[in-house]
Image (tube, rainbow, N blue to C red; front, side):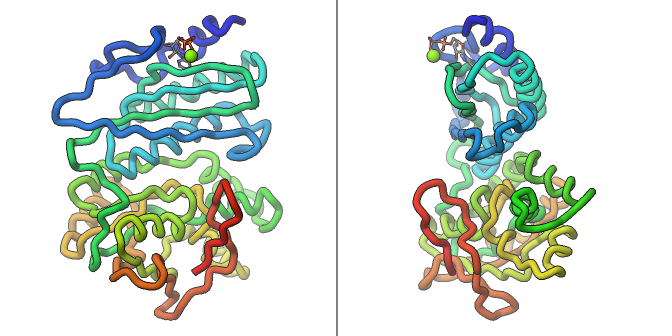
Length: 328
Ligand code: ADP
Ligand code: MG
């Protein structure tokens, strides 16, 4: 099959069309129009077979996760997702794989209102790279850089399940049956917190999505904002399965540093906590207060457990390059 036929069959008409798209797939570049009162948020995330997913992973699952991890980056800025381009590198032509990938990509893109407007296709080791674009009200983006001393720190839903799932798959932890399936679902099908991110515009002072582990990601917020964060480990929201794992000798380390959560962690001025409660209700999202922004101290993130220092045992925060240890 020619490259053009492949693009036509699997990459055309994916996602939801927008009136702001002036030119989509088919020319040398796509053209989009950004309204005067808006800004464009742009992000890219790549998934490589053997690094981000196991060889043989279901194509539909890969497509969903590719969308979800990219949408999560836009969610943390408070942006409304609109467009994407896809760099698709495949080892050979596999009709069934492409069909399943394209179908799932279309489904997830449509669900979040994203239109696929272009890309590139080449042969090589299986690598998927999605470039995502979204709109923000001008000057209103949530960033990592503006957490203020005195703010409360929150996280959405629960953390730790995806990392726990990975440990089960790798045989380090043993959880069976239904519980393992629930965990795996959290790892394989993350839900990007797009609506929450939009709701946090005008409320949160800083925001990040938890992809590399809460501890490491909050360090980014602390460093970029020139503050420190006190994290009360006993307040971390974990699932009932995670609690079970802890009752059998597990600890909070995976919830703190395991990663792949795709939740939002954010800081909010204390006197706006009522708005956070309202947002939790209106968006039907569990939101937990997990700490405070404090004056810049010796460490960017100060881990406490019921007021005492908490020692993170494993260097769990995921880093692609180098073997930098993450310790408290
Ligand atoms: P060029 O050679 O000019 O770079 P291509 O042959 O790579 O163009 O692509 C032709 C058209 O198809 C372009 O509009 C491009 O954006 C689109 N396209 C190519 N690959 C993909 C893909 N995987 N997903 C979506 N659009 C794609
Ligand atoms: Mg090209």
